[in-house]
Amino acid sequence: MKDRIRISEIGLYLRCPRLVYFQSLGTLEPGPRSARHLLLRHLMLSLDEEGADLGRLEEVVARLDVELPLIYREELDREELSAAASVLREQLPDLARSLLPLLKALLPCQVDVELRGDRVGLSGRLDRLVSRGPELVPSLIRGGNPPETGVWKRDRLQLAGYALLVEERFGQTVRQGQVEYPLAGEVRPVLMRSVDRARVLRLRDRIGQIKAGQLPDRPEEAPCQSCKVADSCLTRHSLASRFF
Ligand code: SF4
Image (cartoon, rainbow, N blue to C red):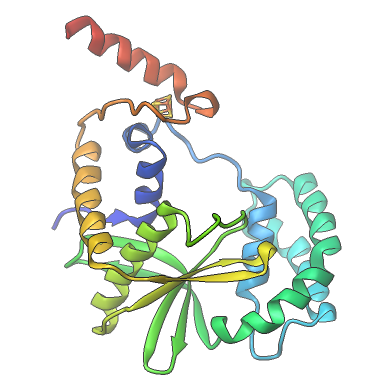
């Protein structure tokens, strides 16, 4: 059986295919976790039928301030976490107001759902799987802002990957996914399209080739200025240019 491709690798490929190559070589090491993102994600995952009033959210943030350093021991900067928790505390009154009408789009649910699909050759950990009547709705949590309409392309394709995994695991069609933007107070629905499912399967194959050693071209619009492997990447580019 071929190695399954992680859904996170699809996200990485869409940032720059070469990042997948350098990650597979071990040159691209995972950076420190963003304290702000982790806090917000765990806060969202803690929501349940008891609601999201301000007092409850404050309790959760206080708990996370203590527990996250225990969970992410070496991946999280303690001072960055305290600063992020202070900022989040100031945002909690707005967050409590905006989350209240959104709860019905988020619950009931399973959170942190680990999915593996031998048939689709993918795996990944889904933030949230919402049960909406007989339907299952994969849901992603994003700390940034949404685009003007719809969701970002990378999120749409990652959702299509999770839809394939949910379909294999639960044997039912996923018609809709969604992306949660807690700081913007929105949950945006995403219709699952066959064209996105097909694109994910092509990306899976392409990522498999890269992990087997094929160096991809350097895309014109790659985010090279902030790239941690820019030096290695430039060397590869120069070596290739010598021969072609
Ligand atoms: S330097 Fe640019 S092309 Fe190379 S891996 Fe980084 S983002 Fe991609």
